Length: 142
Image (cartoon, rainbow, N blue to C red; front, side, top):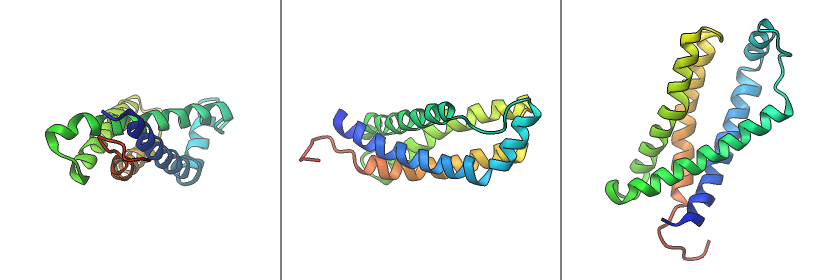
């Protein structure tokens, strides 16, 4: 595996994930989260520290996605289909399953969590296509 390309593609995928998550949570769902957080006795705003943790998680998720692509590429072949399968796998493990657990806890609005799941699927496919496109087994210069 080419670790330089895994990290490079993963950071680009992570940037896409972080930008997308920012648009979702600070834009589309901002009022929903604020109201829900206040109902739980929280401030209703994400702190700088929370945002930093979420951004680090986004970059690590992107790196994991490209690593998975590099790992399965010998068996499934290089290309967009394998990138989308890798993105969908990471989405299922990192987004769908944890969010289904949150739905079962009934702490957050159902419609917001469904939005998170659907948005996340599109996000991970796009991040997978772009991040995995940068992966090469051999470096011919970056």
